[in-house]
Amino acid sequence: MTSGVGLIVSLMFVQFSAPDLALTQISVDVVTTILLLLALNLLPKTTPAETDTAGRLGRGGLAAAVGLGVGALTYAILTRDFQTISDYHLAEAKPGGGGTNVVNVILVDFRGFDTFGEIIVLGIAAITIFALLDNALRGAAAKTLASIRHPLQSKDAHPLILVVATRILLPLALTVAVFIFLRGHNEPGGGFIAGLVVAIALIMQYLASGYAWAAQRARIDSQAMIGAGVAIAGLAGLASLFFDWPFLTSTYTHVDLPLIGEIEIASAVPSISASS
Amino acid sequence: MELLVASAVGMMTTVGVYLILQQRTFPIIVGLTLLSYAVNVFLFSAGRLVVDRPPIISDADAYTDPLPQALVLTAIVISFGMTALIVVLALRGFLETENDTADLPGEDLAPETEADK
Image (cartoon, rainbow over all chains, first blue to last red; front, side, top):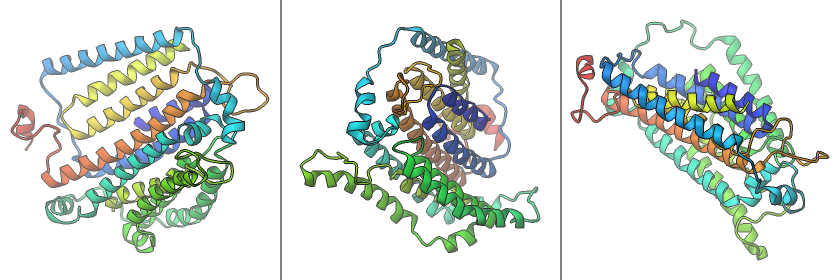
């Protein structure tokens, strides 16, 4: 259901002139759906109905009130007159930032600190996820995990067609990711979407061929990758100091911040590792 | 069109808030996801709904407002990180304790969770 909502939201972004948002939303949704399926697979199968009618009505009333308020607020904002503050960004994107995709130029050049913080937040989240799952196969958690047996398990755990198709898709997806990454400054695209495409390609390997097979062939330590992603972003920012420019100033020539992708890969891979 | 988007934001908020008030972790996760969709669309709509004017410099004479889009792009990424984190947190919590209620045990356990054990 959430993926349905996500699909419609991204279609809305397409309709209202936001191609970058649509691309990001749709690729985020793919990974989110896989994560939610993983949670559904391991969490209890049934949710007992909450029986107290008064509490249910109270919560429903509260939710409806909040929803109505937010909806009214949105409508009020949408129908107001509008004075943009982005004329500077639109005017300076090409001469100042060196790119024609204004959204990505804002993210990388005008608001570089924001994006740097975003990279660090994602890195922290990824390391936390890694820590939570790394020792999940020991202690009380492992016992619970072993006690979950699925009556509806398929006999053929790794269907041949799926395995072969995902292995062919991996290099293709990597190529597409590089393409999206490099065009991000001028056309819809960018580092985060590229990173998600790589992550999806890797997750498909885990899903199709099993965790043991994929983990054996993963030569890059995901923890090191998270660290490297944050370090590259920081160094790209520090490089501008050597030329007497403020932190995170970028010129046309050096490859700047859209390295968020590096972190994404690492955050998505360990989170899927509990699935098999 | 404005009414449609506003009602969609209101609807997603309603469902999200209702699900967050549940006791089990999975509805709460889904509720948080829906709420973040609602917030993203709300922030995006602060730049007004403009059809067919993508903020990519070309020969066009007008563009939509790029600033809310940049903010929402960051918001999508952060909310994705948050969702991934709480999914894994809920999973690990359930695997450790075999209990997927969001309340602390013994604090204010509702009767139906007691019967569930």
